[in-house]
Image 1 (cartoon, rainbow, N blue to C red):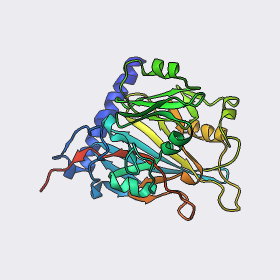
Image 2: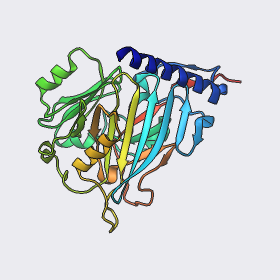
Image 3: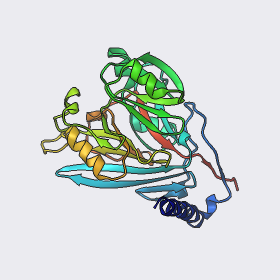
Image 4: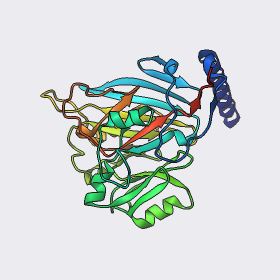
Length: 304
């Protein structure tokens, strides 16, 4: 069985490489590399890589937007594959050492994001409670917020969610890994394949209410496959939005999710693709924020 699965995986990888060559012959002569762990952003997207309004692809990244409906709630999911872990990145409004804000779409455009979502509003946590804050390989704050779930992303692109965090639990989870990004919102919606427990849900404010939600997910570790997901919520008179448990159920229904982590929601919720906000486009209450999470291209096309 293991040999069969390994053979199938090799066939899939070869097929994907051939597909890139056939669909993007203009890209074949270019080059790709890992991106530095800094705040400068990714390489600019190739306009020819936008196959249609929902898909972008070049040899280093593939993004596909999908729309779902859960009851009366519209959910958007970006399925992402990247060639190198450095293409999963974070960016501040201006600088992680300062508490400043900007619109998510402006931050995404500045760093050449193919797809982006809002982050954990780190400046709020730093001002009110502290936090364990690492961004693009630099530690800005080492004040663990007790009893909150912390997401750690290492330099291999793998997720570790520390539940009910403490300094001791964080230290045990790090255990020699190079952590390049960390987040302090939560909760963990799926942790090592296990969906959020209904009783654990009660630790988080407004978790039983229906709201806009945002999450980032990793599929199989080491696969380079991720999901960014948002759901729309109540800002009109129509009954919509998801509770935290409904949100966890939806993400689990997508299949293959190993770890899923809840991010800032409500009017902070934003998914940006091709430089355009895709969710709640008519909502006038979108707010400025301190940070984003994004995926970037690492492909440099050969100049003609």
